[in-house]
Length: 193
Image 1 (cartoon, rainbow, N blue to C red):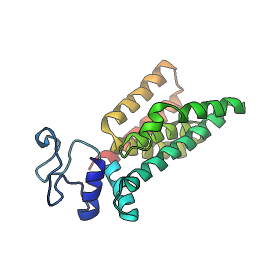
Image 2 (tube, rainbow, N blue to C red):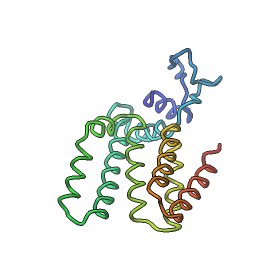
Image 3 (cartoon, one colour):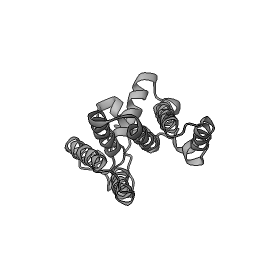
């Protein structure tokens, strides 16, 4: 579906199920509004794929390229996190090998869907928590939560809930709670249409 919507974006600027010839829908078009625009799924993945298709032409390779690069960015964020957490290089490289050789990463990071985005954003959060402080971290987390929301609504809600549950169970410092709450509130303003 991402490649379909990306192609329609390159033609008319909006993801639509109608390409002028065919309608792309399932379950009687339950996720489409009256203009045949998807209203239940986020559009970030569609616009990323559309940008790649517009730059490099219409092919499977060009639709998947940005997602593979985003997956690699996730590896770099995770590597930065590991270097900050572990002084021993063997542990850093072991963690990196385990991260990059898991089946979900290998399959999903090159798929033309939101999966690579979620992998990258989760790794970026780890990096931000270990490398940024105060206002920089609040701004970066606000942008991250906004991107997370526009990549996948439900995953964003689960991620935010998991952060608060983990913070509660691990007795996180009040400063960290405050930073996450401010970031989520700032991101919520950006969620609104």
